[in-house]
Structures are given as C-alpha cells and as structure tokens.
Image 1: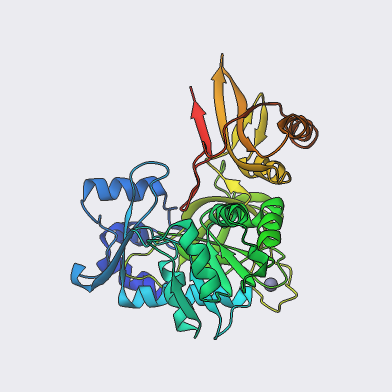
Image 2 (image 1 turned 90 degrees about the vertical axis):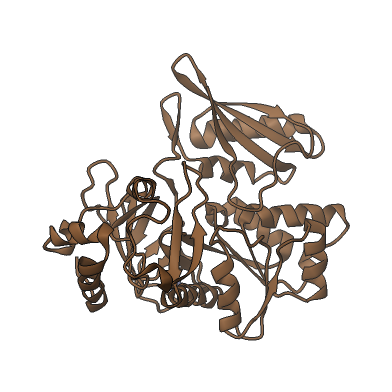
Length: 401
Ligand SMILES: [Zn+2]
C-alpha cells in the first residue's frame, strides 16, 4: 500500500499528540501494519474517556463544530471538527456536487432538519461555497417543503432517497407534479437507495431529474460520489486511502471480489480515522472511467453493510435486494421488513402499504422473491399511513424474536 506525503505528515503529528492513535502508530512500521480501527473501539474510548474520548490531536479549544453518529447500532459517537477539518469536509462535498453536474447558479434545496447529525450540514455549506444558492429546508412540513421547492425554483434537491419518495407521494396527493418543478438533479445519501436501480428509477421519474448517490459517514467524511456517467461510486482518493479486505480473514481482497471497504481520511487531522472498517461492502474497480477521473469506483454502489445481511432459511440476503424488488411496484407506497425468528429459523415478513388492488401486487412480489432471491416471504397489507416515513436514515429492517 502506497501512502502519501500527506499521510506521513499526519502520522508524525498524531504519534506525538493524539492519545488514541499514538500507540497504534508507534507500534507499526508500514502502513499495513497499523491495526484496523473499528466503530466499537471509538464507542468504548468515548465511554471510558467522556465526553469526547482520546482521539483528539489538538487542545479542545481548537474544535468549533460537534456532530454525532445516528447511533443505529448502539450509543451515538460524538465527532468534533476544527475550522480546518470542516473546510476539508466542504471540499469533499464540492466533489459530490461537481460529480453530479451541479454548477454555480444552481439553487440547492436541502430537505433536512439541521440536527446533530452531520448529514447535509456540509452539503448545505458546500453548495454556497461553489456559488450555488443554498436553500434551507429545516423546520418545515413536507407540504411546506414542496411549496418552497416550487416558489424558490430549486434546481437541485438534496435529501435521503426515502424522503425524496415521500416528497413525491405527498406531491401526488396534493395534485402537484414534481416533474414540472425546476429540479434537474437530486443528490442522496444516508441510505444506499439511490444506487438501488428500482429506487433510483422511481425518484427520477417522480422528479423528472437525474438522481445521484453519494456516500459518507460522520466519523469519516463524504468519501464517495457518482460522476455523470453513473457507473459506480467514485472514491475520492485525493482525500481518502481506500483498501478492500475480506471481512472474515481481514486479508486484502482481490479487485472484483465483494469485500469490506477500509478507509483512512487525510484531511481531518484533529479527529482522524485510520484504516477504519466502514462495514460497507462493495466491489471495487480500478478501470478508467469515461469521465476521466482516475479514482477507484464501487460498482453498483455500497452493496450492503457487513452487519445487515440477513439469512432466510440458509439464503443470505441484503435488505437492498429486497428493496429493489419492492420498488418495482409503484402501487407499494411504503414497506417494512421484519425478520421473525421461528424455531431457530429466520422468516421474512414484509409489511406493505398498497394503493389499489393488493392481491395481484402481493402475488407478483411473492413470485419475484422466489425467482430472483430464492426466498419466501409472508406479505401483509397494512393501512395507508401506518408505516413510518423517514426523513433521516430509514430503519425499515427489524428483528422480531
Ligand atoms: Zn467517473
């Protein structure tokens, strides 16, 4: 693994000043001897050294922003930025926008409540930095947001894929046609949805726009984005060192093999992550891209999380594969996946809100689960509006004991 001068410069600073990384770095010769960092280690470190943990390179007065992880898998981790590292975040987000074809003069509507999740805070400021008009969409109902998108003639929509579908759903109910709005580009993150072909297609059709995926993490930064050729998620290798490992053996994976992405960020010296096991699974390609970027690509986006694969009667399935089938059916307005344990076996139970005649849709879903995924599911129709609509990261998968 070739490291950059930037990494070596950062390493020298961390070895001297960062309690969390100093020992790890001192004991390691080459880059690949540095131990992996895991989410659990970060959680444990903050629990043992509250409130911010020991992964701080500078005196606490140097940090000017605080955010936290969503805490999907346990206690949230707090993450601090200095002015310099926040500036780096914005640079990474400018690449996301540039990849999607956003330009100065665009009007970027960010449909997001500005809470403690780093989410689209950086996207909002990065829009401004590149000369676009940043339109805040916090503190508004979905109906008010729709009005705002039309009245301000927004050309770019930034939100989770789930929320884009929610906006489209409410627009339909109100007799608004989003494809007649000025929106020409939608940029999504927080969930893999925009890389799931059927989810992408639904968003594009609803908005009459081109839909782009992007991927980032609170503790890492905005590391991946799609270019206009939409042939996978580029990893911003100017700002991140990417490795692929076999999640079981922890050995380097071959190109073309489904593997776990391990990342090191280079511009967040105040609170970095080095050789971080992202849990994101994908297939990497280093083939040149038609866009001219030489950065590696995750083909088909993030294919799943190492920790969200479910096993239904011996068949391994990612929730994204289930979503890709459900989203083929425009009559399904919302859905939730329950994995029910029955005498040592896991059974898949799908709750769906269906518009119109449900029997035919349910029959087709059953057929497609069987044909495409070789699994069976019990499918239950639930009342319209009974399933949650998510603005932040959706939680559609639930384990029921
Ligand atoms: Zn490209």
